[in-house]
Length: 124
Image (cartoon, rainbow, N blue to C red; front, side, top):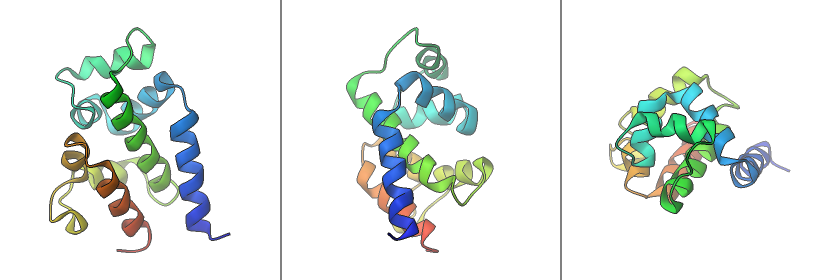
């Protein structure tokens, strides 16, 4: 099996089966509360901390975004540092018509962000 496919499958499995408090914890540690909150489309970064502690649960659309962010993060962490991944989420991306993956995810265009991450991993 192609290494890239196995990385993608493992990332998908982790994002699908992971508890949301674990996912929120991991994302806030790696990307920060502000960026995670922005992509999840919540007003308060502290909300991410509440999800991480298990005090609150995200709405369905927020849960979907968190899992997509985590899936992308899990794919990228196989090749890049957390610092580089954070920059990738915030930077203007040629695969996304020079929009940032963070804004694309916030707009619920999750598939586009996932495809951009795959292209990045393939050297694009």
